[in-house]
Amino acid sequence: APVESRFESPFTVTIDEDVLDKAPVFCGRLIRGVKNGPSPVWLQQRLRAIGLRPISALVDITNFLTYDINRPLHVFDADKVKGSGLRVHWARAGTKLEALDDKEYTFEPDMIMISDAEGPEAIAGVMGGNPTGCSEETVNVFIESAYWDPVTTASTGRRLKIHSDARYRFERGIDPASCPVGADAGTAMILELCGGEASEMVIAGAVPDTSRSYTLRPERVVSLVGMEIARDEQVRILTELGFECSDDGGNIAAAVPSWRPDVLG
Figure 1 (cartoon, rainbow, N blue to C red):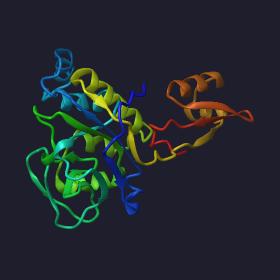
Figure 2 (cartoon, helix red, strand yellow):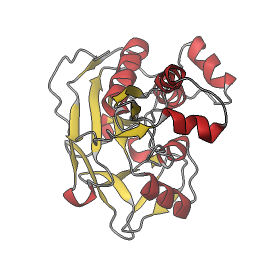
Figure 3 (tube, rainbow, N blue to C red):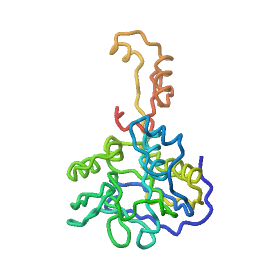
Figure 4 (cartoon, one colour):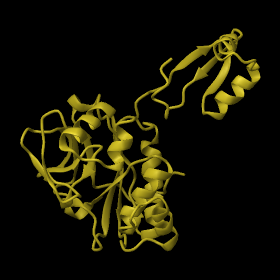
């Protein structure tokens, strides 16, 4: 459910024009007055059950949502961000950042960065940076929920030799429509577990339109699989898988859900 916003965001987000086709949308919220510490026992137990180590409430919330709804998020310590916002852009060759794994990385021009007024703060779709990482002392955070191009993310991660949960998902193609939903889900969990109050959502770019529909001939399915599958049953199965079915002159018009980038025909 959408989160109630208590104030206008003093934080801005921009995406450079020449990178919009690879980074079409970036949503976020500023949350002030949070208290970071150990997450509740139930959350720690759930993370341990899938082999993750609990770190702190803010980090655990993003890890939980990465696995729960396949929505990678990143949380910046807003007080450590220089200037009044973040910018998404192609990297300048030779710029460096110490990432959250405590290693320093050097970037090439075809990698996407998230920077503040003084330089890179995150490697888009791959890993955040140490300078704006959250700690026990963090009180104001900016939560990021964005869409990053699979091929660019895979290429960046491979060359920098970084394997992360975010990279794993973005390079396979996540649901672009989940950006605002993810920002709200992350904000709601932070407010519930860490307190604070949230700003309005800031959005740079727009959720890309992935809507498409394909015609399916019910008798063709039967001939391909060698089994009698009634038209109604074909529609039921597709609907259960998230497709929206309608009649197309005796055939089935199947609209593809936004989370299925692999369906192209």
